[in-house]
Length: 244
Picture 1 (tube, rainbow, N blue to C red):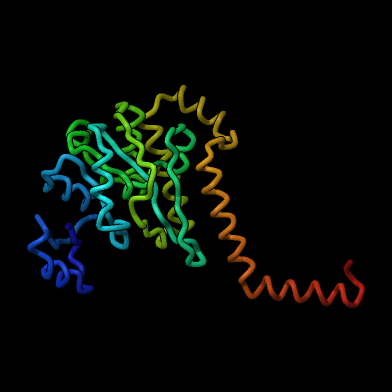
Picture 2: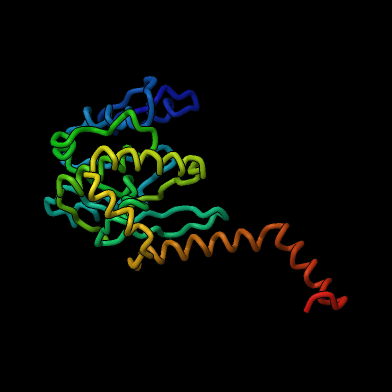
């Protein structure tokens, strides 16, 4: 456990369970990726998984289930559960076959990934200069540039706390992704990607995710006071014959 010097009572909980924790520290860090890199250096396991504040495994048996499926691939990944804007839980599915467009748009939820420690030793740790997209950059290096072997897990691994994702943060993430691509990918390939990036998604899981998100957005609109007022106004217009 790498704690950033919190004062919210986390230390008391850590101390309560310290006999079950191989290592913990509570020191000020420079950001989430600095904390994750600290954790990598302290681990001695074969595979690494990262959970941030608010994330949790879906059951006590999930790791046993995961490792019953593992067969020496570099990286394994599964899906995650998330919360919609109207507090509904839904499964955000990951595709078994990753396309470049799907990878650019969403990458893979790093909380649902199990990465061999030797992959970090081979290609480096998380880029601490990036604030949002460093795990995405690492995945580009590992999966696209170094052709790390992938194993697909056909079940959800974690509940991912996505409540802190703002539209502003998403814009900054896109900027960081573009910055990473310009540094990592040859210009001719990037140019080819930019001409094909408007192609509609064909991956089934991508459609399912988009449909769920749109459905949740629609429910949010329908439950809003403005929508109800708009409905009442339209009924009134129809009643007095102004609108058909």
